[in-house]
Length: 340
Image 1 (cartoon, rainbow, N blue to C red):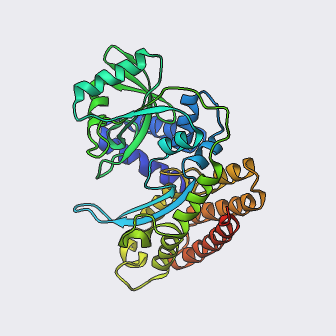
Image 2 (cartoon, helix red, strand yellow):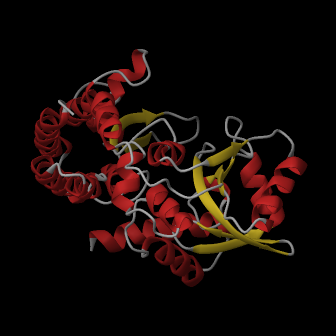
């Protein structure tokens, strides 16, 4: 019943945004949500590479797991919960390619004409460019009050129709793609072109794990926002869930619509900016693949615990206790990996 309520909310949101009928909007929402529960960047890169590495390996090389917790306030909108459970804020695809030793070129330009020329040249060379676009401008993605980036692979250009891969195949007019590609000021018209095959040597697994540990246990940005990252961010989430009186506590912040907050929590831990179980089970596969068996088992259990958090429909203070158990497992996993 809870899942159906959550689905209906997403369908209604899409109807309001696109003007589609309920039947059409529901088909589009369920099509996007029913693909195999992959990790977006790792699955996308694996597809472009032709399966040369496992999704788990590419996740680990790209930075693996992380944790960022914020509640953003925008005028005219309810408080916006965001949890990023994967490595953040460095983009994962370039980092995975670097640690795998795979040659690539990354290009940006302020000119839409140059960007389109780069896109066509890469496709003409028989390669699939990976482009960073504004996710809210893709017609199958939910709208957001800010231009959040997402990476997609461009698989073809047929006349004025761009074919892309974004968890599943999709298409949109060239004008629509260019608008989405132009909307990100920082990453405007970013295009990654993989120019060669992986070398014979082993990827930098040790460096990848050490970087993941450092970002979960220490500073990420080097400023006051670091309290929202890593283990510190997890503890902050638990504290604000437990807080029933303070302005930053969930009881005061989301008390009028707790179902919406729990729906968003579910999406952040199971779907958006993550893979199921806050990406921990897939990271456990990476650890198993690289010989870190004991830590892998801890992270499998951490993934199960984060999924319990995601699906719980309990009062916020009770939910805080589930988060505290997840933090305990995270601390145990980091202790096992820290010497790497």
